[in-house]
Image (cartoon, rainbow, N blue to C red):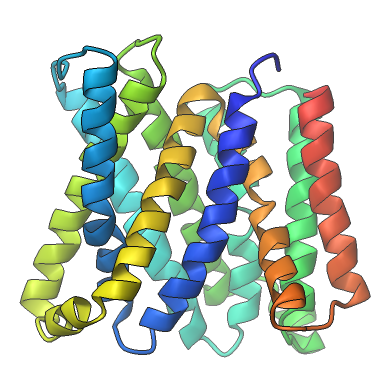
Amino acid sequence: MENWGWVYLTLMAAAVQSVRTGGQKYLTRHMSTFAVSLVRFVYGLPFVVAYFVFLLYAYGREIPEITLYFLSFCLLGGLGQILATALLIYLFSFRNFAVGTTYARTEAFLTAVAGAFIFGEVISLQGWLAITISVTGVIIITVVKTTIDNDNWVTRLWNKSAAVGLASGLGFALASLSIREAALSFGDDTVLFPAALTLLTTILMQSAILGLYIVVRERQQITIMLREWKVGTFVGITSALGSIGWFTAFTLQKASFVKAVGQIEFIFTLAISILFFRERTSPGELCGMLLVVAGIVYLLVAA
């Protein structure tokens, strides 16, 4: 891999996303799930618009012809992200939600599978092995951090919770692959511009879809969104920065590789809990962290 730009962008996006999660957790105390998601898009939109306009003038470009092909994949990516998030949250209504959450953490592997069989992405054997190693580490971390009785693992390895978890992971996987397909549809050598246009289009669609839902079903949430503008702005800025990193990285590299490296977010999250909240780390979590790092290093060196 001669171009390491996508690696730096992914690490930046994962780090920013870890910080953004804190702001979103605060908002969930006062808002519904979809309202918190809308805050992320609406408050982040002005910063995405500013970034796009900057690139527009910096490159001396005009907005290219917007094709139905491009719009279709932006819509698919936006809907996939919204539905996958909703399914992930729906998991917590199950008594054995931990099993489903573990399946959802196979997102990077599902991205590789969907990319290979649906989008025709060629992944080397070393790439598959690296992704598998890092995903295994994430699964171990998820299992260790969650209480699961033996009965669930032995007799309930496959159930409704598992199906929802896989559906969530697949939704995120298809969203990432669709975003990459939309950005690449321009055939543009300047990576930043098509990635920014894809991001702007996708966020506009997501804002419209969730905004309509909130107006129709949860109108009272609008007042709370306005009241929490300070935290909302923080979430919007960090969301915009993270999305810029993810979308540009997807344009530069296979979505499965980006997702595999992006799993370092779990380590960032654990590091925050250890350094700032003084939480203790178990041997299982350390083992999982080592596997995540090992998988990422192997991906960057050998794949």
